[in-house]
Length: 371
Image 1: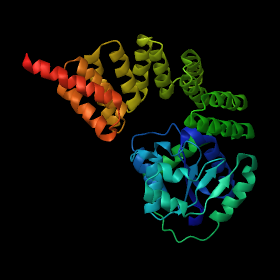
Image 2: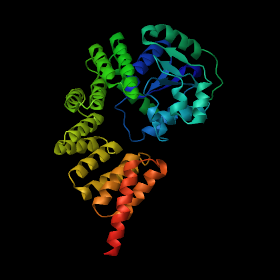
Image 3: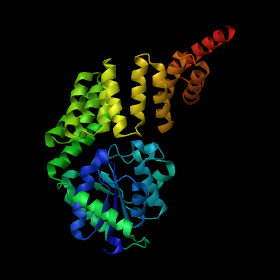
Image 4: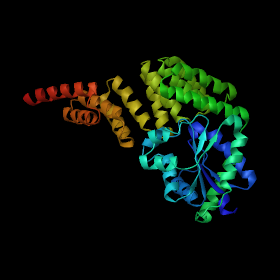
């Protein structure tokens, strides 16, 4: 086991900064650092507690912050958020890694106020992929400073977990310059999608693919950009390419399902949602999408359980309540439809569809009572 000050935990969002995180790992380990890096493919059984233990077992915590890293952190159960908050709670030596054009103001936009404030006080390292080696020299200088952090020891189960983790990383190819350039274009495109520049995003995801044609996430996200332009057939083709590279990529089935639904190819959309749910039974968007397809087919009774499951998995998305309210309305469950509309209007009083649906449901309920 290396000295305590040479133990590191890298936290990152796999979908937007996998290559940068792996490159940092590959830069630190030859210098004697014991680095934990979560990679896809580890056993999810007791994964959450294993992760939290590894934060406690390491002196340094490196949150890799790139465009797209923090958007999901509004969900209190998001794992990137939980890792950051655990590192703060344990008083780890936190060194934020700001990748390429990450905007520090995003900390306040996406994180709880207290968490954002604490990260903003910490001295980070700006990593531009074009000057990666220089940034790593600066990072190692930060890591070499003495710390007073108390770390916990690994037991036998943790040792087995770490061996599995290391074996998984050892199967991955070294990160090359072209791979980092691909991820940089990917992050630029991601920001364009967020700002609504879908034309620019399509082009920049194409640039990412030119540097790394195996980047399945770039094909998937290009599909999202095409869908934003209403070009659903092009979106489907992009999702197809993503799935050729990664057949178990559940998000691509969801995206393709949405595109098929927009083209009124409901049988295909439902089939894709079935697959997505089989691959990831916790994906609220897959249940909602399947429910919407059933609703569009006027199979409202069949849609209701899917809307309910989507809401159970993500009770903050008002679109899910809107979908269920419509299904309740058309199955003549007016009180339930009104309750869902009230929930939406309580959080968004100007929601026109919810207001109109509520008014109509109240009228229908009154007619029903008169009868």
